[in-house]
Image 1 (cartoon, rainbow, N blue to C red):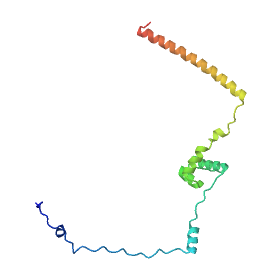
Image 2: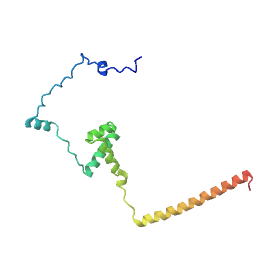
Image 3: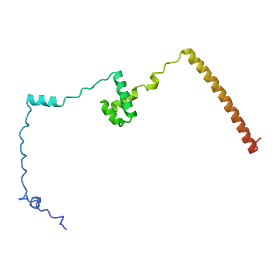
Image 4: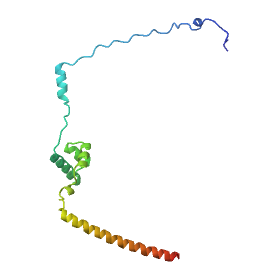
Length: 151
């Protein structure tokens, strides 16, 4: 154990290590080679920036129909059909979500007089079905009371 009352020189205890290496300086790098205008023009022509393409509503419908027919005819998977149409999957699903289904586009609205007549007819049928249901429930309830001996 070390003697706590030892008040000797700290410098003597921590002697400089003669074997320790002095920190070395970093190697200096040469400056980067700057591209000339011709090299920059060539680099730009090799990879042009993709300009977003805007499709009209008619083009969207045509592409969706094309994809639908390819998938239905089992010419490949949905992903293959989307790729062959030249759009991304995200675009396909966005267009599909916003487009109206084919069956609903051909449907024309009914005139107001016919709609009102249909509504009245449905209301009458609804009332008739409610009364039938109420009668059945009353009969079932009476039968259960009779079985349990509550009447």
